[in-house]
Length: 81
Image (cartoon, rainbow, N blue to C red; front, side):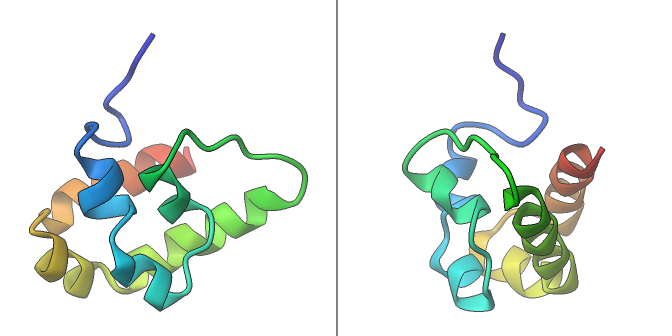
């Protein structure tokens, strides 16, 4: 069953796969640009770090990607639950 709790298909490239996230230091979430992401072993802490980077830079990411801060924050909070 597909879910849009982390965004729509277009988010893979335009939001999560945006070069800005990689430039800021995100490691796992930008991989969504190319494929599904399966978290294994110690990667959970890397995903949490990606989320913190995104939250800490949400205004800049919103400006660059044209996704609202509220949209981004909602998706990140869903991932963190």
